[in-house]
Length: 172
Image (cartoon, rainbow, N blue to C red; front, side):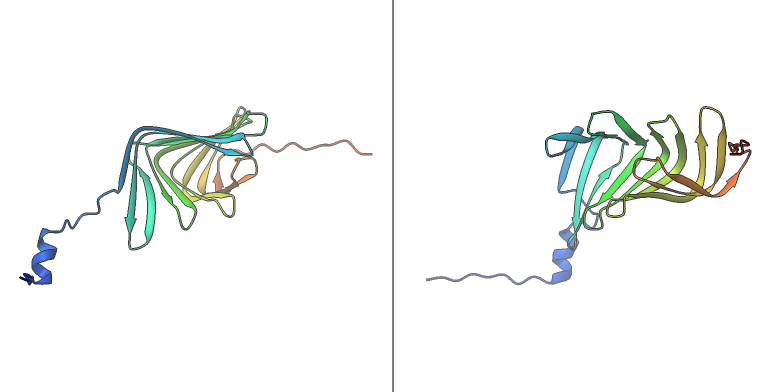
């Protein structure tokens, strides 16, 4: 019986190990639907999807952009978000979209910003960056934004520009 073993210095082994973070999964022209009880709730489309796992942390990266559409139970579009880059943190259930982020709601309001976060657990969308909201009758700009996930109930923290308010002058 012959036993053979080799002994290596840990630093020598590390020299041959890649220092960059490499994806464990890569998908091109990725499309998926998320359903709830057989009803389509979300449609996600991305030219490239990468999945990374580091020290128990895993996340998805969409380096070439993303399109995410949310539907109601009648398959009507509630909201839609596009961005040139996105990242999904699985454990924290948090998304980050950046670079030319455009979000629209069912009423046609369009939000434009450079960075937007979505916290799935709270159903909250927000940013501390400059935002522009384009509505059919006005454009509102400001810094800082918060909304529900369907972009129905939103507010700008530091608004700028003309804001129109409907006032009912009828007395009863």
